[in-house]
Length: 440
Image 1 (cartoon, rainbow, N blue to C red):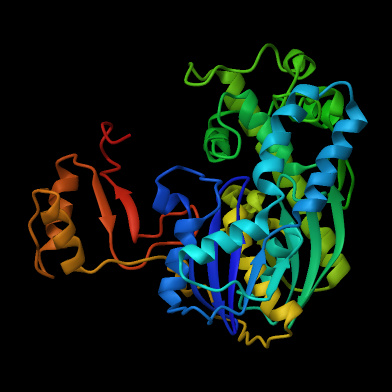
Image 2: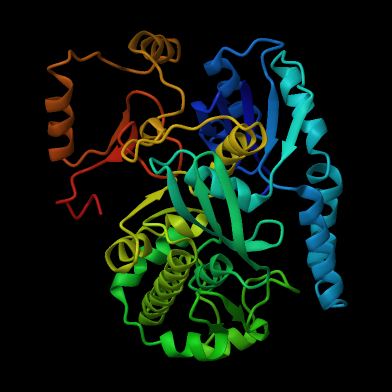
């Protein structure tokens, strides 16, 4: 059975193709459009996945989308009415896009498949956002059974979920709901320290080691009421994302000594200390969630997904200090991975497809699930466009690259299938000599 999984319209749109539970292909739209975090319907990624799987006009059996648009739309409308008349500007900015695109997903699926010469299958599934995240975490993992944590900004209503996987069955046991969100809390600090929300969080994480955790008490005292099980409530008096166009407001700025840092301006000790402080709080919340998941499920293994699962520092802390023997993290933990999760949820949870897990090997194929290009294809492309190039023998290319790096050149590597997810794993990497200050 061939199932096409899709994610779109928020950030990191992607497509994935699963055949009888085997992951054949998966890729983000940004890799084809060259627009970072491209949120548009993933037409190019769909074409790639169908071609990679050799899908003919009548070969596609089902399509699975990674959330429920009508439920998400209802949340936006309900949120607006809860804060009205505040938030009118943001509401009026959101409505045209919803009415033009986000409520018409079946038609966009039909158009995309028609462009590939593929008939629309009878089965079109819409999973819940956190079901897709949980499925992307558990089903490809090596564990026959595991606890599951998904933590992100927000799906339909859920912002974090605790689940349990056993064989081909997956169940979400508990959820936290919008507006109380660890992902949105972290993004608020991303915004306040001058980085771009939904893309600059890794910069905030990288900034943390340079600071001191001097704002931890202020965060805990003023911004969130944290419980032992990792659940919490945010004090919305300090945030702007419910009724405004920014993540934080003037009260947040007053708490942390002035307005948000302007993008690309000098980074001061305040920003490094804020980064360290929110990182410390994030790790504490994740640890509490994990301990509660362990207590509820009794499992020794944990699977993670959702945008917060890309915080590798928190993941390392969880592995060192948490209650689980082992953890497995979906490499495309953000919304891109939701496309894969939706397809896997459709196969295992809806269609009842079997699953094999040996406790050691996952089914992600090293996350090398994107397109690849042979030497002849690359050579023809370069020649057609007039780029200077020379082909190196098998014994020549590594020394040549090493020499270029040693003389402070930057190298782009393209070898084998492209990675799925935001981490460079060697097939698509930019490398330079880390000993050189010029490279930094």
